[in-house]
Image 1 (cartoon, one colour):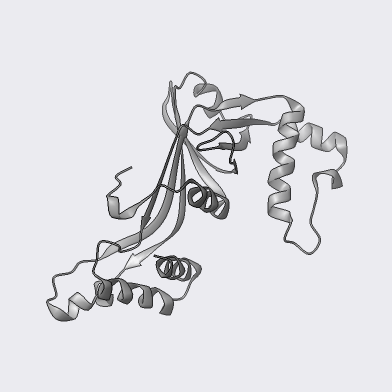
Image 2 (cartoon, rainbow, N blue to C red):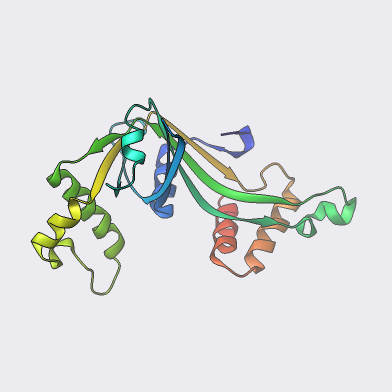
Length: 209
């Protein structure tokens, strides 16, 4: 990923928090058929240091996991809030007009070699953790144990899990840091006035700069 110093985010806890908030990553691998990509819900564990491990699963019928078995490395991309920047928000537009549109975003890239998991109990653990993560804030959380055990066993046969120890972790917080203070303030105020979760999230992130 192209990482100008003004946009680079290297703090591992910040990158992990972003992954937990984004929740879904795209697993990209290279196999005999070329590049393949699957969007998947994932978990991040802090261990082993320094970058931690990603966990998830995909359908057993998805051939990506078999074709990627010989791949030396995989890439997982997480795209967070992102939105258009209009030149009308820049103070510079009113001063000299030498401005153009751009796009702001938060993204994390994780690299590593996946370990494919077919063990039934290890798979059950991944599925249970994923479910609990997404159900815990609901008024009446659903649990894997709410379904009949034989049904869950059958569903586990239809998936393959993975653990991806991260060997390289990159973050890019492109939030207009390459502009002057007046332009940054204009973009932040523009996002704050826009409708939608992406704009609101970017305005909040810019407030933390």
